[in-house]
Length: 637
Image 1 (cartoon, one colour):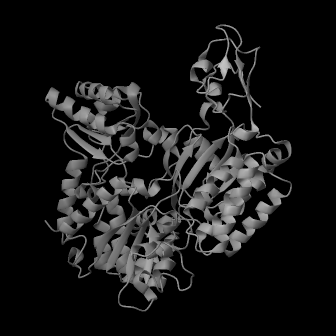
Image 2 (tube, one colour):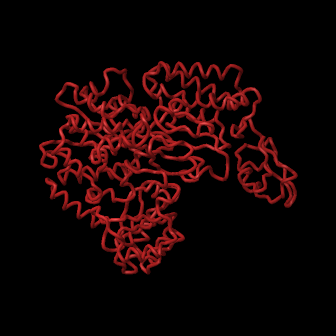
């Protein structure tokens, strides 16, 4: 049935509430990409099979990722009105047992991550817990509340508000959480100028990396002459270790669609495109379903909500070229041309897709729009720092205990993200650096961990905000090798159109490879700095303009490591193979033989229970012996 009025929306909302908060027990399995990669599909099947075997009257559903990827697969159990229990690190066997125990009234606290208690009815009116909820709260008394779990304590979910809690393919559940209600208000009560005014007042800046004020961008496009205008969602997320956009598209695609419709109304566009890389099959599947469902319900297409406003959205699949994250390259790709940047001006707001005025924002930016227009620009502007408003989503990965997707207020410190939310460094190692901003971001050392996370402060360190990738490194990381790795990635992804980027990155990479191989020479560090400055100043697009960041920041903060590689022919972190050697300490070796079993080159020999010896001639420096030895007998020098 098409939704045309507020009464229709209310009916859809009631259906969504019944689905989200049913009168019976409900099991929800997180089946985003991170969950599926760790075994969520067998867990989902096990829950369904066990429910059938027991004849249990329960509901089994799916949802996106709740952010804590380290503890996937995750199962949420809605066991009483207002109370959800979250279970971590599930497998098929545990899932079957969990179904049995929950149906017997056992909270199975030892498997739980946290509990989520909503104090109130689904209409938002105050209400104490029901008798059934009180009973389950007593059963789950040993389970911490979600706000008491370190990973979630300092987070604030706006862009990720629905991820992990709704079925992304159930539009009524999105509506039950307030979805499309604000769209009705915008189309029926707010002129385009007021919509843009709210976005400007909010201080929302583009979350794709550049941080340009969103409201100003919309205003430029609205005022640009032309009867035909386009809206584009940039979902070409290509940073290594980054998956912010993917998680939103997989877990809450309707938030992006609703944001785009509002933006199109404000700008005066009738056509929209979501440019998503083909490497995101689940995101594409859920987006396709969301678009089809929104069209069927009258929330997308012709005469949306009976307002007379029409707007259509199509998907355009990218082949995975990193440079197509740059907006002019993206538009060239959509048009069927080679994904290469062009000189600006003219800017896309003046002359973009098919030479028409075009507004481009990324997934996270669009997902924020419905909540901003629901609560008002002033509310959003009250969150964050002076010049960077609202929240930012980061994917925290690397040598950190709690890997996952986090959303935090702007202005929070790097230390809080790494140690309070991330739980600190793995294996008790020492923190060394955190790289922010993707492959062309910068590496920030320990002494700057208290830097506030916002656009200006990160730029002052030599890094960038980027789209939100955050890679944590420990003391076993070679910073020269890190710079080499990212330059190698950028060399492969450069379109080659402009000389500074094409030749500059290639030459810097050659120097880094020589340094890592012990072939560095006096003056190489200064030469890297000079080439990096030229590439930054003269490249055509942001890929080239930011590509020297990994090199320049590692030289700035870890120059001693470069000097050790060049002058002493040593890699302090013991990473660069050409500069390290392995040996076995006779004093520490117990002769257990573990290293012999894992050595692929058969370079280790010795009698059982006697100190072993390692042949340097045979050793391929793979590091397997060091990783296996429990006694610290394998020495790396």
